[in-house]
Length: 184
Image (cartoon, rainbow, N blue to C red; front, side, top):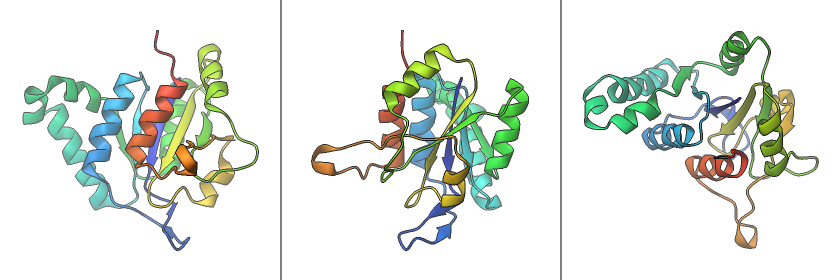
């Protein structure tokens, strides 16, 4: 079972400081649609700032229940996957309650090196293992060390042509899910 999270805190800024980032409307739309396409159990948006969570909730409600739900039913279906949380512990507790065990945590990053989980290995594990897995994507300039250190795995980065790999997070989510989720 695969869950994904978009982490807005704790993440790094360009100077290497731990910060919280703002919710982006397009991230919610595009990642929700990608999560639905690839059969992700739930797409968590994690942000500690109440005003940011309220904004994300307003967007989500518009597409689930408001005018948007009738205007675009396929978008409504995608937004059913979205859950807004204040911190990673809240997400881990919910997944643990639903599944009866803590999820395996997998973090992503554009600059990871060393011992890494490959997309091919993760794809194989997901086919045979019914444990919950939480795949965390960072905003800003990447996931803070404190989250990386508590992860069970670090996923290999997307390698672009000539070493370029600075994708928008919503693009990275789509590429990685396409690589790890088997669509039969």
